[in-house]
Amino acid sequence: MRWGLIGASNIASSSMMSAFRANGGEIVSVLSASPDRARSYADTHGIPEPHARLDDLLAGDIDAVYISTTNEKHFAQAMAAIAAGKHVLCEKPLAMTVADAVTMVRAAEEAGLVFATNHHLRNAGSHIAIRDLIGAGRIGEVLSVRVMHAVFLPPHLQGWRLDDPAAGGGVIPDIVVHDADTVRFHLGEDPAGVVAIASNSGMASGVEDSVMSVWEMPSGATVMTHEAFSHRHAGTAIEVHGTAGSIRARGVMTQRPVGEITLTTEAGEEPVPFSDHGLYVRAARLFQDACAGKGRPAADGVDGVKSLAVAAAVAEAARSGRRTAVDYGGV
Image (tube, rainbow, N blue to C red; front, top):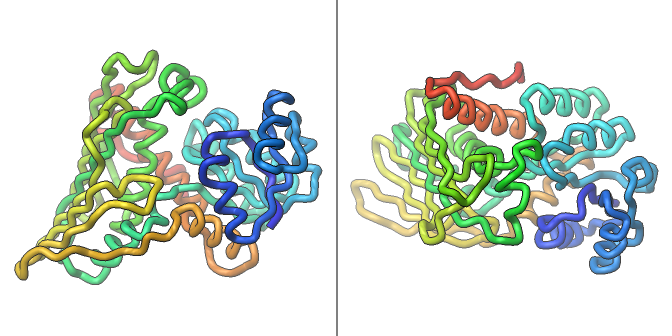
């Protein structure tokens, strides 16, 4: 697969380029609004074609694009790529609004192209193991889920995430979407309504840097989540509690294949083994296979729409102080 990178980003250089190459992919081109940045990035990472204009990148000999620009650019860039006949792997959140995300996904469907969302957590061996335990009935009927995803945003990732609401900054679009996708992956159902409180510890300016929310699931299960940019030592975790047991996973809300899982039932506690494969390598492989007509991406466009819809409901519930129904835009 021949790739064009829309965005000379940290995530592309730290994770995605190696994942594409591990699956036999070739990175042909990269786009940055700054010609100097495009040239420097291309030289550093061995990319033949630097571009400062999207049309020039899309006119090249590429099969797919990976979009990792700031959030407000995703819609226009994805629509242009689809119009050019390219498959699309897009970072989350897909767009600034659910309506735009739905438009992107439907345009790709009509064009017969693969459109996927780069939700990495569902590719982790740890989360696959958790889902398998739930699916096998090891904890019975799910009663509740707790997600602890309060972290410290490292300096090299701060920037617009902490001070630019127009670019999609704030912890809700950045982390709540991940937790929404992960919960959907584990439970196989979509949150129906949410309540939430957001706050700013002083780390951010003009956007929230912490939020807690409670989600109501159609099955009757309840989900509690905590996301933050300002917690240096909290650690991450997810717990799933059921009528016959509990799953507790520590250190698994991460880009790396690490952490530990414990299953507790009437028989006692037991550690749960899981694969330590690369999360992004798996995501890239499944995307490439889908483009070849074999299977589906790890997280497709509808998954991206639904995670964005949950985040949008959390943002509205925090703003209004009222329970907010999740609007999935008809998907």
